[in-house]
Image 1 (cartoon, helix red, strand yellow):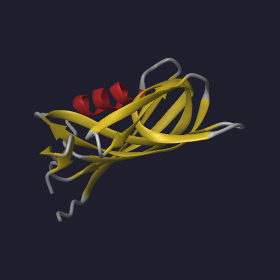
Image 2 (cartoon, rainbow, N blue to C red; image 1 turned 180 degrees about the horizontal axis):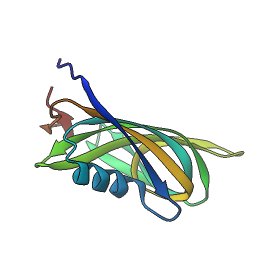
Image 3 (tube, rainbow, N blue to C red; image 1 turned 180 degrees about the vertical axis):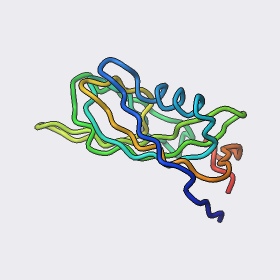
Length: 137
């Protein structure tokens, strides 16, 4: 186990029509962030989520094709092959259902507000095990 101090907190807003995962990666690349914790909320117009199947050692994806509240976005940013990599999980909901999973891509329907809590030091994702790239801590 490693411990990291907090270096700085960045707030980013992802606007209507923009894609969340690539926006987080772009913001972290531009700021030189090598490790961070993510927390956010908002509204997505559509998304692709994934759930890991440990028996097949692969992700199974499914589409969310209507607007849903982004009730919770949590995750981290680490370096994978020397570049920022965003590992993001979300909980989405509307009046009919709630879904959750790994955010592969999500397009903003209104706005998305994300706190990027930059850590002192570097998180690396370079251990491969059972179809997953794990944090090297």
